[in-house]
Image (tube, rainbow, N blue to C red; front, side):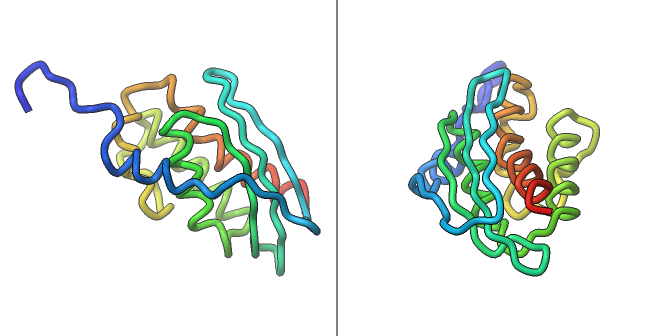
Length: 143
């Protein structure tokens, strides 16, 4: 890339993931439902979960967010089944620390490093963290 030219904000992989967000859906019955809004950007997420043996067994969601928020939601949804409260909290904390520059890697959540271009854009961090915060809140609510 030419000197002084910034890399693109939305990479092909981020846009591809954003397009993979599941369509809006609800679970009935469900163990918990949370609705969260990111204060800095207005992104919104509704998350329903079903839990078996303290871990997510099924989820449904509806999201209104930028491409980063949609991509993060797609990644959360893709890998949330089997996650318990401790795992969700660890993932949210690791991703938050990575985005804020307090650690070099984003932790163990699969494929989350694809969102690397957002690290230098703090205004996008809340949209990326929203699905992980929702997952934690839903697991706390059902406990």
